[in-house]
Length: 421
Image 1 (tube, rainbow, N blue to C red):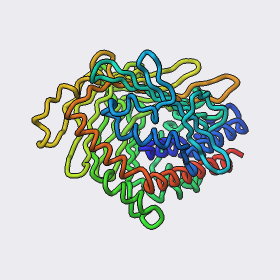
Image 2 (tube, one colour):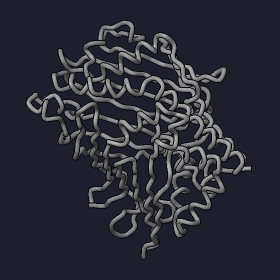
Image 3 (cartoon, rainbow, N blue to C red):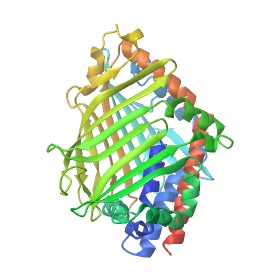
Image 4 (cartoon, rainbow, N blue to C red):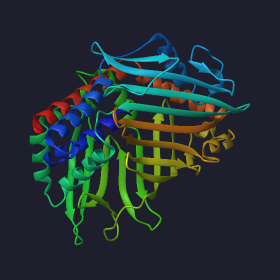
């Protein structure tokens, strides 16, 4: 859900000491923070789609796991190449108080903060096998990858050797508009810091999602959260090959808990003595939710994580090569599950996200992904469930979530402007 991005960026701006990390000087930090937050706010402001993309989006969403239904549908694609690849390319631009997503035959990298380029490709591999690839680039202003990493480091440092009371007072005073905007839906119920003997600090953060807070102003969004967020359970833990545990995330019953440990603004393992975080990690995760009468999900999904740290890019690359254990309804237990292994074969499913410098141009928040699917009865069943969930979101719930996100990022922009004078 896009709310995750709101939570992440809100966390990046939580305390007074974080603001100057956005740039080498206060004026540059202010411009970088305003461009980043303001650009993302525009991305969620009065979102509209041209007719071509409106049609394509609906068909793509309904057929993600059954792509044969749209493979030869000219209403979906902006290009159909001779090698069997179909693509739809979308430009996103803010103008006249609206963010317009337009499917076009040719797109270009963003020129302004918040502008975007999306490319979705589908390639036929065999009679019933297809590969999806996605590429998304969003303008992030002039903040560099190194400066973005400094912001994360400053955030962790801001919690070290401080009491929860001091931290709460800091973010409320430094980012009052953000606190109010986020407080319409979220509350920080738990904030604990523990100083360890080696000088590292363990931080435990518990965030509650309360749809009742927005029910009168955003009723459709609240109803969607009631239906899906409240019944979802998830857990993720980032580890290394030496048994070190670096980040833990748990969620259930509209409550999210995050645990991490840092020293000097750098990650430290939750177990064992402080040491630098390796560049090769692993993520273990599990997730369940309920759609209609069915509980579905997975556990023991493991992925190899590569930390990207170059002169011009910071980010993470994850590959999933091991099939998890699936949680499926008894009613479909008799269906052959072999096709569920297909995404994890070969190079596996890939997800990459990071921030990339472009000297002389916009820095980019870049997201890449790829996965193969093998059509089958079980994927058709799962596709119907995902279509139901998407159908419940598209429309009023999405419009209201966009409005919530735009308000939150605009609040961050205004707080950064006031703080970095």
